[in-house]
Length: 192
Image 1 (tube, one colour):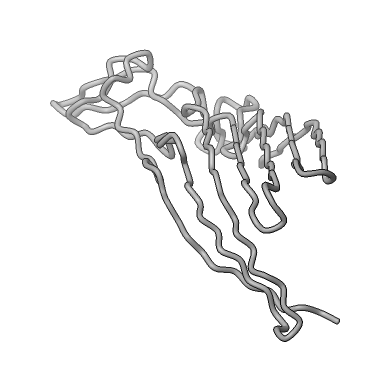
Image 2 (cartoon, one colour):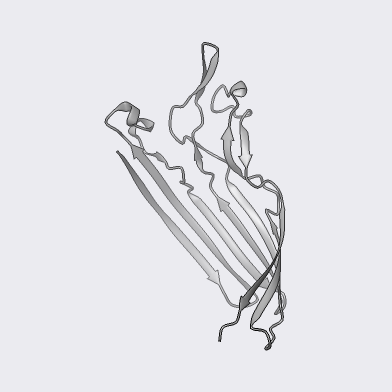
């Protein structure tokens, strides 16, 4: 009944020597679907390819660590991803005092792009011969600039948009909308 196609390109650069180490990844991809059933009710998007729900063409990730001393290091992670596809209404209609929305095509728009910066400082414990494990403390600040990355959009029946270009009444749902500080203690056992 349905078929899909996917293609893309992935690039990666790594630096793992010296006081500054890091990795950068970039992926460009396209994931599309087409569903054409034997009956019109089983066909999606008029049988034309459309962006799959997980189609996110650009994905960029950078992870760096700077060793201040042998025990203290600073780390940062930044991620940017194209917003996921969503289906927005093309028009509004009213039948018997009941409002509804008309959708012309599947996944015809996208949520805003996702991006986030996380920063960390790590203090390694001292290595001692009489202990068979070593621990470290990490203080992290997630979502440093408090970005409210969108997860979904919704409309209330009382404020449906006239057209897809008027999204002032859309309600954005975000999972994380503020700065998240964390502190953790990690340990690992030594192996012989």
